[in-house]
Amino acid sequence: MRLITNISHRLEELQHIVDRVTIMRDGQYITAMNYDEVTMDEIISYMVGREINEQFPRVECKKGKKIFEVKNLNAGKMVRNINFSVFEGEIVGFAGLMGAGRTETTRAIFGVDPKTSGEIYLDGQQVKIHCPMDAIKAGVVLAPEDRKKDGLCTKLSVRDNLILPNLDLVCNKLNIISSEKERQLCDKEIEELKIKTPNVNVDAGNLSGGNQQKVVVGKWLARNSRVVIFDEPTRGIDVGAKVEIYNLMNALKQKGIAVMFVSSEMPEVMGIADRVIVMCDGKITGEVMANETTQNEILTLATNFEKKQ
Image (cartoon, rainbow, N blue to C red; front, side, top):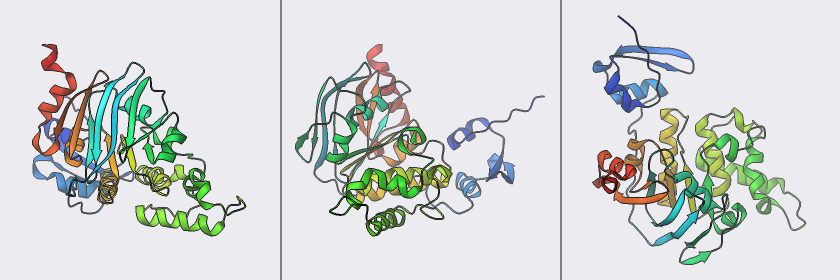
């Protein structure tokens, strides 16, 4: 007889492979039990040390006007003829297998990677985005897939991470940083996003994954951005922090901000998004309403299986 131990953040896997579950938190053993004697909600509560009412909290909003539109976007080999829109009061999720071109699409929109063709519209007006600075000025921002490498300066303080992209907002008429404006901006984002940090002087790299993600988003929200793109927003963070990120996305949605996110977690896409855009081989292969689809339908679109037969 052999013992097999499986370590995973993907809770949906448990029902298919485990007989017994052991839960740890902050490096400490919490409890162990037979899987068929515990519910998923109980497992999550043990993991985070508090009760989580919903794994995927959803907020219903009335669909409003079109905020953001991408037409005929092409970039490199992995972004081919991309067309989609995002409306007020909705979250749009991007699903697909690894290598489908989802991250490349977000990078092209944000101006990190050069476009070969395509048009981007914000509130009905075409915007020219040739680099990230153009996107930021237009109100289109990205929380990248690798937040430690591309989204944060981990060796700098929380304050510096929030202020550096917003120096124009905290300088006086003489272009000298105003300590009062700096404090107000940091306090506002920390309070609104519920960033858990002992103080603003703590290195951003010392925060939890969820709070690091909030700092990434906070620096952009200070600019009253109109479009927020998340690429794998919950990768590497615990279940409780995931719920906080979902609540943040819902709050942005309620404010009328266009929210898009890429995720490799199928339950997450279906649980948080209102509408799901599916990609395969650099192209959009389908678009479905999250509450009207199934994982099988999304996987079929993600593999483009029907068209390949």
